[in-house]
Structures are given as structure tokens and as C-alpha cells.
Image (cartoon, rainbow, N blue to C red; front, side):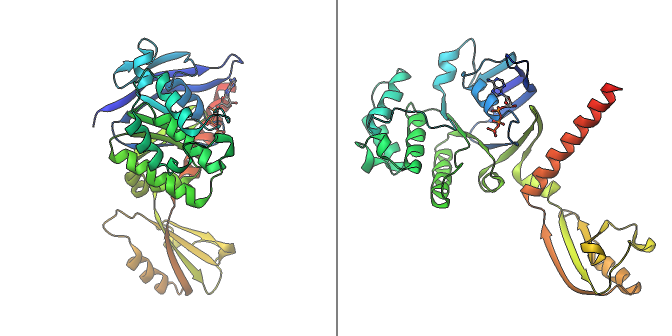
Length: 320
Ligand SMILES: Nc1ncnc2c1ncn2[C@@H]1O[C@H](COP(=O)(O)OP(=O)(O)OP(=O)(O)O)[C@@H](O)[C@H]1O
């Protein structure tokens, strides 16, 4: 699939001297939902803001649908809709006026039918004449989305779209995002909610301390890293894994009362039958067992902490 956004060798050093992005290379595929995950301060907003032309890059090249964001700024920007984290709009204006005005900013001729369609889709049609300040928080967020869509962009950035919204609105937003994708809009969302990425994304990128540490198809990521665990609650505690079982990927939990077996969901043989035979031979009895898959949340936490450890090790090496 062709790339609609290309980010090459992007660096950002703020005036304070802080390097927020380090040699970021990223391609977003046309028509996908891409979730950018990262802890606070990882550089998600900086990256989005640079692609949207709000923050200047220190170095690197970026194009949106073939338009260089510096040289062909207007053309690039017209392809993009941005729903920022913060609500920023004039509270005294009506919903309709605000959305129409946003469209006008991009030099697009009026299109009443299109504006009606997005307001209806966002369940804002009934509120089209209301002042924005009179709307609920969730409604205000929808107005931000309507504004971002007003000029019919092919690419939509959603920066933390569901931060602080209730479960119902979150579900509505997810439906709406899926609907947009069906219409061919490419969607890039940043999120703290792993559940959101797990539910929505076709691909996932993980950013940590300004570096992209992974980009992967969600399902491949879940398969690759989503190892299954089998947990056996033992009758008698073990102080260590018996020597004869050392070859198995086993660990002990709950003060020796739990034996945990890790296995690959893709492997032809899980090795579980063999393990049970061995446990029997060694007289290791268990009273209960459960199996579960590692969630994306656990995968994410282990990726980010591995990246932290490796950068700490590199810093320590450099300091010597
Ligand atoms: N204008 C600025 N001047 C200096 N440093 C900045 C500026 N804006 C952001 N930073 C720093 O750059 C880093 C990345 O910030 P950014 O807002 O991109 O992170 P984020 O991943 O979006 O975080 P969050 O999830 O908290 O929104 C942070 O350490 C932040 O303090």
C-alpha cells in the first residue's frame, strides 16, 4: 500500500535545547488507522504538530500526499485535518458558523450538504445553532472533529481523542473514526489508552523519548509478542525450578505457589502435554490452572521499559 505521509530523518530540538524527536522515520499508509502510543512526554504531540505545520522541524523531510510540508505548505496542509488535544475555539460562535469558518480558512467554496452530513454524523445537527459555550464537554469535542473535517481532508490526526470522555462517547468516536476510514480517510491517533489502540488500529507505532522504537501491524504485534501464559497453582510451594525442568520456559510466582509456563501462540507444538508429563513424573501437583494472553498493555510496558534500560545502558557506557 502506498504511503500518504512520509517522515524522513526528522529531528526536533526545542529552543530550550531539549531534543524532543530523534531521527524519526515513519510512513503512514493510505487508508489505515495508525495508533501512535507513547508515555507522557514521548514526543507524540511534537511529531503531529510538525506534520501539521504548527511546529518547525530542526531537520528532516516530511510530505503529505506527495506535498512537502515546508515547500508546498498550503497544499500539504489542505490534505490534513487536526483535532488537537486542547479545545480551542470561540465559545460565543454557533456550531454551524465555526465549522463553516474553518472550511473557509482553507479556501474551499461553501458546501452546505457536506457540512450537514458531518454535523449529522457527529450528532451535532440538532445543536447547529447553539453557542459552543453552551455545549457539554463531549459535544465540544465533536465540534473540534467537525472543524477538522470541514475542508474534506484525506488525513485526520486525532491527538488523544478520547482523553477524559465517557465510555459512551468513546464508543461513538470509535464508530465515527471507523466510518471515516471506510470513506477512505487515513487516520492517525495518539492515545494513552492501550485499549483504544487494540480496538481501533491497523498498525501501531511506539514512541519513547523521541525515538520510534517499533512500528508493526497490530495483529502481527499481538501474535509476535502476545505470548500465552499457563499458570498452575501448586499444591506445595517450590523454592526453585527443579533441575530437570530447567529446559522449559518456566518461572515461579506467588512465593513459589505458582508455576508459570510461557508459550508461543504461533508455535506448532505448545509443549503443554509434554510439560504435564514431566510435572507428573516429578510429583509436582497443582490444584488449578489458568491460561491467558499477554495484553497489548503488557507488551507496551515491556517495550518501553526495555527501551529505557537500553538507553540507560548506552548512557552509562558513554559516560565511562
Ligand atoms: N515548546 C517547547 N519547548 C521545550 N520543550 C518542549 C516544548 N514542547 C514540548 N516540549 C518537550 O518535548 C517533550 C515531548 O513533548 P510532547 O508534548 O511532544 O509529548 P507527548 O508524547 O505528546 O506527551 P503527552 O502524552 O503528555 O501529551 C516533552 O519533554 C516536553 O516537555
